[in-house]
Image 1 (cartoon, rainbow over the protein chains, first blue to last red):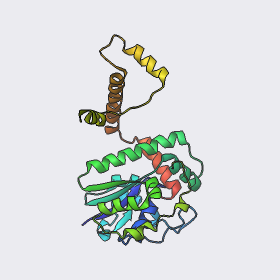
Image 2: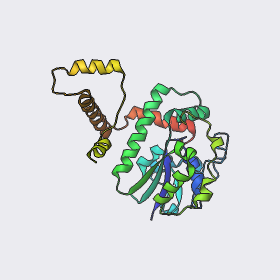
Image 3: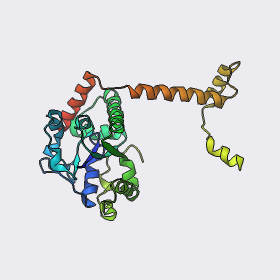
Image 4: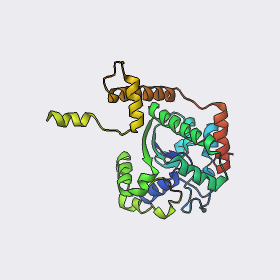
Amino acid sequence: MVNYIVSGLERSGTSMMMQILYRGGAPVAFDNSRKPDYHNPKGYFELEGGKIINRLMEGTFPFEKYDGKFIKITAYGLKFLPKGNYKIIYMVRNIDEILDSMEKMSGPINREEERPLLEKLNRITIKLMDEREDIDYIIVRYNDVIKNPRKEIERVNEFLGGMLNVSEAVKAVDPKLYRNVRER
Amino acid sequence: MEDKKEEKKFTTISIPTALAEKIKKRIEGTGFHSLSAYVTYVLRELLASMEEEEASEALTKEEEEKIKERLRALGYLD
């Protein structure tokens, strides 16, 4: 059994990566409990309204049901992964862009407090993936996908053993949706 | 040929002249024979201590609560 996961901090491009995989023909699991909105016009591509973390914390998420499929679990949730066999695409993005996007969704944020916290969560999560023998992972920078989608998607495809139709997957990247820009 | 090999081993980094002068003064009479040797030493020490700190870091209870608060605000946690 292999569980494929798209992860990263919230607003780091995890939904974009799920769209890329979906468009590229990979088996992607999601439901419609969270509808597309201004913040994610193409949809969230999540299970259980994005609240998988609750199930992971309780130890009740049915991984066996999603064998061979991609699911989205944001960074904090990875610490609750039971022993298994995982391939993870981990999205990273400029933290200030993430905070810009979070502020639009949830209101003002104390950046001096939350920036180092998110950076720390990123570091700890990457270290966790590094240390666990049942996790194979690749880090993908959101900004690189926007700048050079084909190159990045080819890299992802190589990690996945060639399961994607890259030309189709590239079409999922819409630079117009890249609205919270700090880096170019 | 040797020169090319050497080129690959080092790169040039610019620092403000005033800082360079300060460092030169600091390394006078020490075992450091050049500005580059001293800067390399300091950076190695700094990176090693950052890596050590990062390797042992974990979220405190308070930090976990703040993360959960953010996740709730974004709709990722009940």
